[in-house]
Amino acid sequence: MGSVERSCECSTLGDFAVVGMGGDGRDERVFSTLMEIAKHGGDAWWLYASRCSACGQDWMIAQEERIHDNFYFKRLTAGELKMIEEQGAWPPDFVRFEDVIRLGPDHGQVARFFDTNDLTDTVKELMEVRSDISAREIAYMFVLSEPEAERLMDRAARMSWKQLRPFA
Image 1 (tube, rainbow, N blue to C red):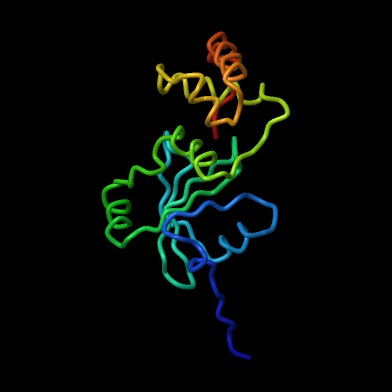
Image 2 (image 1 turned 120 degrees about the horizontal axis):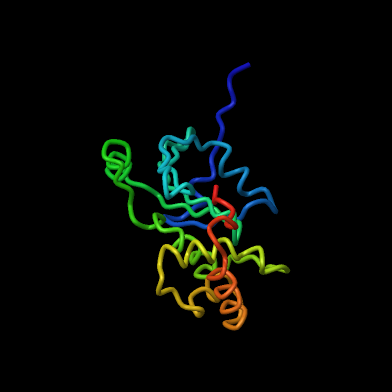
């Protein structure tokens, strides 16, 4: 019996795509042919590049599992992948975690939280990375009211780094 050629989901994804985690199994179908070929690492622990073993398409992928539970895909050109592999130069789209979190609300793929206190660690990190971040921006990213975002920001500001759970 001959080998069965695996088809891929790459043709169902645009140049940019949002794929939710879990649910209907789409994420499993998309990832069934993707092989990680480069990891950003360091401060951008959520970012990596993969290649489809069926069609050869290269992807930059941001895995955002803290807030909205989405994978964000950007189709890469051969030149972009070469820059990643040879120089560690990543396209800027997913390099800042704040930008990655914002993609959920920007594209209407968001999570709702019953206990917003679980968001305090991430709010603290965002405030440390960008001290001028506003309650309005936090509210947008986390799909909260501004008063709720202000409460979280106040709570995060009072938090010591010893209380902060490390991201990873």
